[in-house]
Length: 531
Ligand SMILES: Nc1ncnc2c1ncn2[C@@H]1O[C@H](COP(=O)(O)OP(=O)(O)OP(=O)(O)O)[C@@H](O)[C@H]1O
Ligand SMILES: [Mg+2]
Image (cartoon, rainbow, N blue to C red):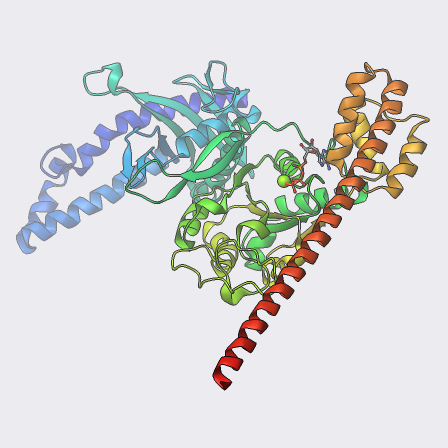
């Protein structure tokens, strides 16, 4: 009943608003109208003694104020229109940029939320711009009521035809109506709340993306920009094989980060968190990044540092990243000199032997460690939104402590060899087996052998095929495969060690021979000189 009353009130209010325009014009027009006729004697008296122009201005103001007060007494409701963007295309240096005001879309998404749209009877559904979701919104001319902190508000979807009444010039608005006395709450709190909620609905409807930086196709600009594909990685924390307690710690940390917007704001800290993932190849560092992105519903920016030539290119690239994203630099030790000698930071280089010549000074245009550090410390303070940065490495001991100190990399996560708990997860993933009497044998074996989750996963794949899905058979084959893999690894390691020793001996013999030749030459010179 009350709702019906509200609707009737809104309809009546719209009629009054439409007609009061001409009514107030009667009062505000100083040349014509009955108000002018009634007040004419007074006006002419004052006009005699006051400069005419000044008098008319003040009189006009006076009448306007009266008219506004009268209007407020009759209709204390205020409306705010949020119009559909015009769709005009602006151009930036890097190409066309679509209209950047997203308020209309955000309001529409907010109104499509369950709380609001259940009021409206006539709805319209459109495919979301991204993803397979639908955005359900009000049909033109519909009203819905909303409430915020005890304040009642009404939204209506309005369409305005152009002058000739042609559909081509239609412009849509979402019109918000509320009582005058709530203006402060509505403008300062409600509308930002609507935008935030709308943004979240739009974000959850979209497909997530995996961005990579690639060389620009435009020959004029050396600038490297992002290109993306849809990110549809199946890994989750459930399927990630690792120690259970460690996994829970990471998930808790991510949850705390995600829910700490107010904390970061209060503490004056940029809303970012850094994770360093380290461990041997195949222990699941990249898989962990995918699990994090799926858990948080974030995009991933995979930074390929080898195609970024300068610090300013890097800065530009990273500033273009959006909120709610994970910025990953894989194998950080291989792509940048981060080996603890910051003074000579330069492009990748590896000094294999102690007596190798020192590297040339870094070229002027290069990404340096200090450039990267400046970016990590500086970017997010300017960009506001939430971001996670992840570095992965196989050799944590080689990294400059400045790069991974707490505050830059807040959490250091070791991804280690596959032990029994991780095996259980993999057995579930690959063989759909939760528990089995053969698990004991596997547990014992993995306690002694250092196999990575990637190795174990491969063995399980082989067993799954060969065992035709029969659990006992699959597990027996798995154990054989694991033993085979461990033996192969041990053999490969022994061979690598023997090769390294042989190389070192050959190198030492060569150095000895070179030294002997040099000594002989020096002795011959000395003999020549003494003659
Ligand atoms: N912890 C894990 N949980 C589940 N699967 C894993 C795990 N670790 C590795 N794998 C499997 O092994 C494959 C390779 O793992 P991944 O690429 O994540 O290793 P990585 O540590 O990033 O290796 P690299 O150091 O060579 O980059 C993955 O595709 C996945 O199938
Ligand atoms: Mg990797």
